[in-house]
Image (cartoon, rainbow, N blue to C red; front, side, top):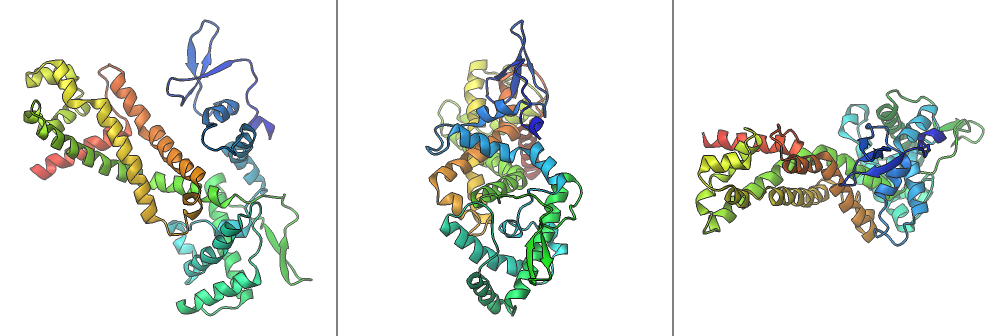
Length: 382
């Protein structure tokens, strides 16, 4: 398994680009060449992502250990072997995607909701780390009591059965998404002698993912599903605000209504600011002050990040982000996670398009969503 994380032979000097996002190999003639996607050195990734100012308790050793545990290639290999799979109780702490709805029975969502309300609450309050263990009798009783108003009358034994059944659905879904095929080896097996479930000794020991990490992983999924929607809204708001600002400006008031058209010429017609200035009959420097493209892009990025946090807080249940919201360090993690996601998803590319100075087609996701917005503006005005 070591080759998955120790893939740096030390023969090449590895650098980061000016945006500290991509790895480059420094050749002997002082030229650089990008490392192909998927071939990045893991050691360089650890150093690139490490932020010593993020948390006083986050040492480089701890950070290295955490990223090693999260290494996707390593985890995929281990999962394919059927080891290090999360316990039922850790799986049940997660959000159930709607795609699994056809596999759930009536009342399953209610059962998971009360499990979150009781088990996740107690685990969070106890600050317990490591493997998640079976709910206590008191916890099971509280879950049963919470299910009664939902017209679900159930015994402790039956509740355990349903929780394990739902967990197995989540496990198979997780394994399928990670490895492309389901894993049939259960993490626990029924022991007839004790009439209880016991750990399957065929599987290796696994420390369940901390609740904070589960919630951050859920955040990543939310980012992926919401990004284009949030980006469109942010672009709409920033363009409208820019038009309002130009209308209030004495020198550029006459260009306020032309601003969206100018963006269309720049992003769709691939015209330079100089060409737009000539078309509008103004100097290039004046066109540059009207558009302020870098500032415009920064504003869209800021609004995107801001709206992301607002959207996520509305779409998640009260308990889903409770841990990270109660911890300043994890709040920083959330903000940084969203910022890095947005940068990698489109804003690094969008900034590069502006700074390139070349007349080339702008195809960043930002440019695509902006063009969609501008086309909708034209359609609404027609």
